[in-house]
Amino acid sequence: MMADAYQVLCTGAMGILAVLMVVCLIRCAIGPRVSDRIMAVNMVSTLTIIMVGIMTVYLKEGYLADVALVYAVLSFLAVIVLCKVYTGIYRERRHAETVSALKEEQEGTACR
Amino acid sequence: MQIVRFVFGAVFLIIGLLSCIVGVIGVFKFKYAANRMHAAAINDTLGISLCMLGLSVLAPDIASALKMILVIIFFWISAPVASHLLCRLEVETNEEREQYMELHVIEGTEADADKNTAGAPEMEEKVEEAENETADGQKMTAEASDTQIASMDNMVKGETA
Image (cartoon, rainbow over all chains, first blue to last red):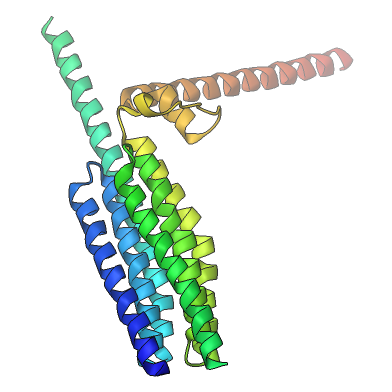
């Protein structure tokens, strides 16, 4: 009887989490800005951690809690690396634009 | 006893799942990326904390329960850092940010330096040159004053001799 209750709770929670993850993926696909996409990735990894925790209870395997802990560290690292990479890309692009604009200006003054 | 434990854990888990649902709905409700980040933070803090608390009550052994508590503590530390970096990315890369928010640039920060030099490398070089010049000028004056002092010393010595 208890086993049935555990199974119903875990399966229901897993179903809800799966639906929420699909919705987060939709946000990731339509997100107009890069930060929306990174935020959606962060949310998906958060829901994955909860899923791994539910698997720990459902399968009664203690080592899956370690997996959840490592996944938390990895998702944090992924968000930080993506933020740094996109900030760097934006800065490089802006730098290249200003350099090309200045070169055009200089050529214009040389022609005069 | 078993039933009490199950009910406790299930209640926490269901409240956590409800706050996750609220966060995901909020991500679709708001219009601007920084506001959506606020809704996503519910998921990162309240949702995962309550779910992990419930799951640690339901956990098969004490070690995995403590590991789940450790996940909560790690998220308390990491989620604010992640959302801070994400918000900085949003503020820095959005060209039309003045439409959505008021920016107050604090003097002496990185943003202040960006604003002053406007990202132009020529300007930066000029600023560096100017700094070099001033440094050279200061050196010059310092050397001059040294030589002056030396000459004055010599003069004084000459007078005494």
